Amino acid sequence: MFFGKPKVKKENDRVPPNQNVTTKWPVLHVGNVPYYPDLTDWDLKVYGMVEKPTTFTYDELLTLPRATTQNDIHCVTGWSKLDNVWEGVAVKDIVKDVGIHPSAKYVLLHAEEGWTTNLPLEDFLKESSLLAHTHNGESLSPEHGYPLRAVVPHLYFWKSAKWLRGIEFLPLETPGFWEKNGYHMYGDPWKEERFSWD
Image (cartoon, rainbow, N blue to C red; front, side, top):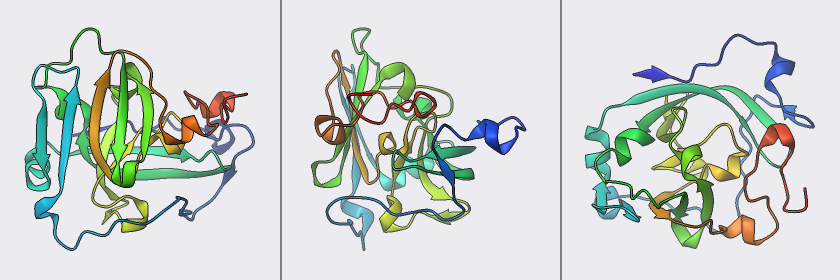
C-alpha cells in the first residue's frame, strides 16, 4: 500500500515559514541513544482508553500490512527535509482491533527513557501517520529511532517520537516532555507553533 505522496508543488510551497531545506538528516535528541542488539525483549504497548489493550512484539508488527508513504518533515529547530520515503505500519492498522473508546480524544506517545509527546487523536489517526522502521530504503539508524518511530509529518517533527514503546489513549490533553518544557501543545509548522507562547 502506498499513500501520502505529495502533489507536485514548487519547493517554496512545501517549506513552512523560517525553515531551511537540507539534504542531510540532523540528529537531535537529549539523553542516551537506545541500542537493541536483540529485539526479542522489545514490544509496543497500545493501551489506555481502549477495549482491548494490545502488546505487539517486533515480529508481530512485521506481519501487519506494510505501508509506504512519502512526505516532507519539518524540525522545530528550523530545518526541513523533503521527499522522505518511509516504510512501516499505518497507524490505522495498529489500532483497528483495539476498540478506541469514544471518550478518547488524545494520544500520548511513550518512548524509551520516559520521553513522551502528545497528539490530538484525529491527528494521530490521519491517513499520513505511520509507525516507521525504514527510511529511504534503509532500516532506521539508532540515532533516528530504530527500531520504530512515529511519523506524523503535518506537525513539527518532535511529535514523531523516536524509539516508540507505547501508545496511550486519553480523554484529556496531557503534555509530553517537550510540551512541559515550553514547546507548543500542537506544533503546526505552517503557523510556526514552536513554543507555548507562540
